[in-house]
Image (cartoon, rainbow, N blue to C red):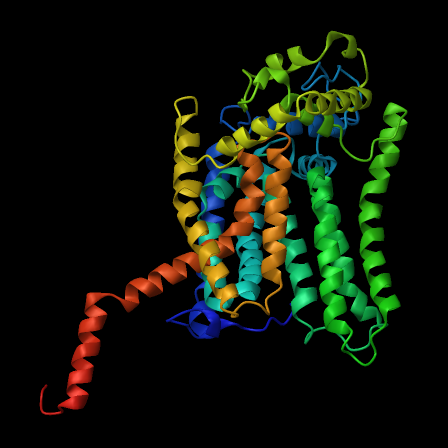
Length: 477
């Protein structure tokens, strides 16, 4: 584990000792695992009765088809427009392989991968959040962040479903943990820029990025920000070392890029063999951009257009005979044409997506369970996120956080990820990676609120007054 400099002294009013916070972390992990196991057991073997997780039907079907030797195909015509027996690249290859491996070992039952996923998420999500938040704001905030992420309703809900969200968020937190450690913590890095050990963090960064890409290809638009920021920060720190070599830094960065390419290239070759044309990874960007910017929305985004058949009906009839890859490419062109033909409508439509992206209130069209999870997670945490962001901004302005470059990276990634979905297609579940990035800020906001309340509590002020009085007048009990 990387050595991370403590910054407890930055927390206002009531800093806690390291031992007092670390003692709480195992209990947080136990709570996190129990809650996610409860979600997995509640959802059980069923994969088609809860809202917001219908994609698990597709992942389950693909895994069983792959296990039975049919490759990445469906036995019947499938969403979005894939013919029976035709190759598909619409879904995450890595998650399908995960389900297939678990089914091979434990039998074809959705409960086994749900339980494994719940346990892994229950342990790793609080730990990674703790590490990132501790590096940002100190150990106390890190422990609070671990607790907040362990009880966050959306993360508990999706940990028990066969969808990519849980592993995808873990991969993002892991790569950000590695990146911020590289930029912020040089005490644990081996001396000598040419040693094999100096390449290990960059290898881990490449693996984390590769896993994230195979879970959700949209992260490819964000990774250049992470990698460029990491290289710049490492350069700024290492150039002061006597054995610094710019060529060595570039080689380490190249190692990360090559590992990422090693994750993607096999699937690019598979896609070329399946479709006869270049497809870097998945065939879903064109579908999403076409549907998300279709004139049907006008200037008010509709998140769910009635269901699957209605989406398929929007695809022009003359394109329906194309294979999935070519159809995705053609739909992307049409979506871009929508934007070029009506740029003002595109701008207003993108702005209207903020209502869906940041939704925290219950609606009559949502399932009662969705309303409950939405209100009790994002609805409760949003004020903490805002308070934490304001607190961080004030601390930065005062100069207390200007030596903490990881703050900038977190905000850049969250902003870029949000903007990307506001310009294309958004649902509440697409915001969840940003929620994970905001948890450390929510923890900072909660610590600030609690400390402020303690500072101004009447009981504490009364005690302080009595203590002051006894000092000034020892005869008074």
